[in-house]
Length: 222
Image 1 (tube, helix red, strand yellow):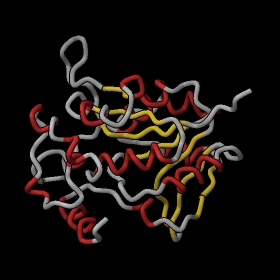
Image 2 (image 1 turned 180 degrees about the vertical axis):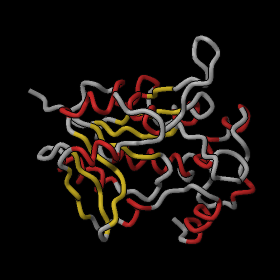
Image 3 (image 1 turned 45 degrees about the vertical axis):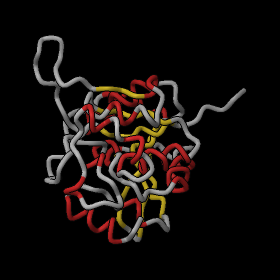
């Protein structure tokens, strides 16, 4: 019988409100100044093919895909066209901006995690990875995946500092579905035995929240 594998749930549904450059932070080129990147208008999205190898989003997705594990991406209607250049539509969960009554859909990491886990309910566990971490190595994803074969939960760690991905075994399915708001999965990590996976990968700590974060990455010529 073929062994089921954990799924990598990539979170790409955040508003990126701390990023004050032009356009969404996930669409920024890793090799160009932030102010030169066009916004995510339809015509701008068409240009993504030329940038696909070196944006924050594409580099993060490529590393998740290179792990060889199933990948599910939770995103917004605006970012969905960019995600779908890398991931099959069946594996893209689009959280609408408004519900059936026209009310704004609640936002937050908890809702996104729950949506991604629900869409991959037959997976043998889940690895939660934000889409703004272009330096996170595929080998680090696999190391955390291996840890949840023995522990209910596990997380990547570099020099004693907790990072991503965070992994959960199938027994925590219901707990993950109950997540809401911006709480993420810290409550679950605190409640269940979790294993720190010490890695030689500083990329587990590096995300892009601000223009300054992006400039630091560019200065490293990643």
